[in-house]
Amino acid sequence: MTIALLATGDELIHGDTLNTNAHALAQLLSFEGFSLGLQATCGDKENEIIECLTFLRQQQDIIIVIGGLGPTKDDLTRFALARFLQQPLVLHDMALDHVAKRLQQANIPLSEGNQQQCLFPKDAILLPNPHGTALGCCYRQNKQLFFLLPGPPRECLPMMREQVLPLLQQTQRSSKHILKWRIFGVAESEIAHTLEQALSPFPCQTGYRLDTPYIEFKIRCAEEWVQAIQQTIDPILAPHQIAPIEYKASDALRELILKTNQPITLIDEATGGLLESVLVRPGTHHLLQCHQKGTTALSFHVRGLQEYWSMQPPGGHTQLTIHYSNQQQEGGETHTIPYRSPLVVQYALEWLSFRLFHLINQLH
Image 1 (cartoon, rainbow, N blue to C red):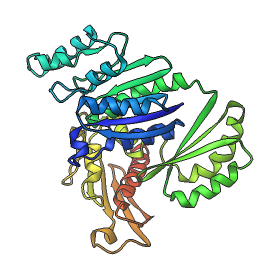
Image 2 (image 1 turned 30 degrees about the horizontal axis):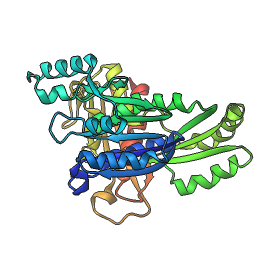
Image 3 (image 1 turned 60 degrees about the horizontal axis):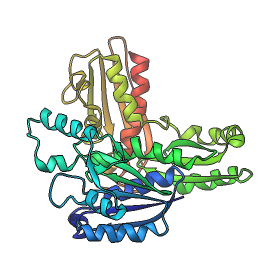
């Protein structure tokens, strides 16, 4: 089963917008073990979209089309698909209800263009979009699947992860299991050789995906090999794990702050405000005092990355320090981390989040 990606939009053809959707979707599909065939990009012309669909259909089992589902005259993807499939478009009540509610919340009247967003082939499966007005859809013709996704990344990527991926996994019906780990603090080139050697006795496929400063490592194998592979790989990767595969250390820290619901002073003189920008969200903003020392019961002051901020060339190591205090005690700790590139700031963010998570639990 092979999958093709077709991105539409004059802004992509003219170079006004970078096609980040196709990059993200290709990474996700590859990491989940799907076979990718071709990627194509075309403008907003209906005939061009049909020509691309005709070409891709010759060898691909699934075609995912991105963009062109909006309310304007140049949003022609649904019309191109209808002509290509020789299926009429009909107004779907589910889509009309969704669009009307989204517009009502924004005090925007329902226009003819918005009603265009409610048109899909009669038997299409509609894909919810909690982030915008444009629903996506899935349509099966013979043995081929066609997906339409909205163009804005904040709408396209969640729809892909939450709606399309589960449908693809049902279609694939694989008997194999996927094991995943999130690795921190080691380069892919350093760890890959060790992992591949350890896995050489097992019939499995491996995959790596960079999610700076983490590496996501995946193994695809039959069910009977799962336990043996986990027993082999877990000890190797344990020293390089600071968060489970489901989330990053910074996500875990933010959730802990929200859960404890206790004000914290956090002065950041290491990441240039990146730590604050990741932690401050609705629900946590009133719990964090980040710009001056306050009267909170729990206080942290982080410093470091001197080599980075003084613009020294990458190479070697740099340090992070955390000073902490509560009503009973105060103390500090210093950590040395690799300084390989300017991405050391993202590395520091996740390492500090990991340590602050444990210190809050310890001192709370």
